[in-house]
Amino acid sequence: MEAFIEAHEPTIRLACFGAIFAAMVVWELAAPRRPLTQSRTVRWSGNLGLVVINTVLVRLLFPVAAMGMAALATERGWGLMNHLGWDWTITVVVSVIALDLAIYLQHVLFHAIPVLWRLHRMHHADLNFDVTTGLRFHPIEIILSILIKMSIVVVVGPPVIAVLLFEVLLNGTSLFNHGNVRMPPALDNILRWIVVTPDMHRVHHSVVPSEANSNFGFNLPWWDRLFGTYRDQPAAGQIDMTIGIEVFREPADQRIDRLLVQPFIGEAGAYPINRSAGSGDTEDG
Image 1 (cartoon, rainbow, N blue to C red):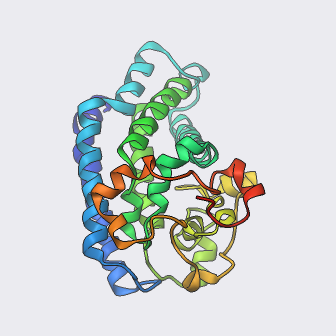
Image 2: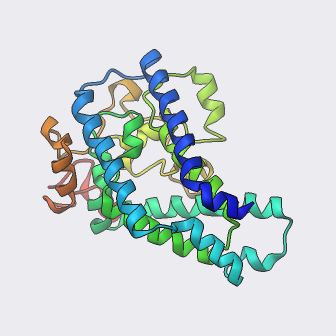
Image 3: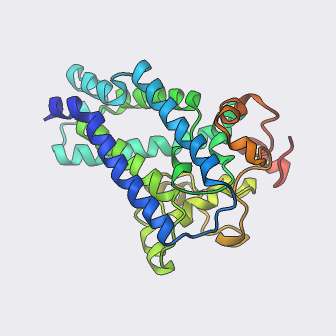
């Protein structure tokens, strides 16, 4: 089974990605949550262009990545899960949850350290919030994230199937919770106890630093509630809140050439967590 999964992992992930992406695009067109204020052509060419760059880069630099590391860890007995002797199903579930917690902590880290925030802020500099925002990450951040993930896999020792499930869930929920989609408030209130919903994650993309430093979860919503980073709604409301950060607010900043150089331009500003308390709710650079 694990050999089959490793051999067909790209196909499985691509099929899941394509199906979820298409479903979210249709949902956004049928029931948008907020009106778009920027050209979809410019934004999507930049955001989807990054997907192409990141995919090629990852396949060249990390042909086996986290799943290959999981197979190696299983073979050599590395990691906690390979020494506990738990039932296979429990091992897979606990592994997925542990990996999700690690990604939550990584996300907080990229908001806490100014040099990492410089990389991550490109994700937040999108002036609209839709399904393609969930794909918009700087190539250097992607490389660092993979290295961190591979290290976590060595420590946790998850089965290969758990890593595949986690990757599919993470990609799928990232597309979902960045969706510009409308759902009944009652349904949203229920779902956000199980999965991060678009209304929950949209708060994280507020221009206000104190709101941008909340709701860090991508998949499971429990960590924000457990660690005190949960925020129910933005102060201005879902419709009137401003998306993005204080800098890079020109439409031209959404071009892919501008996106790639954003980490090296200007100040880190007031958004990093360790600066927010003393910097107010505006960007300082």
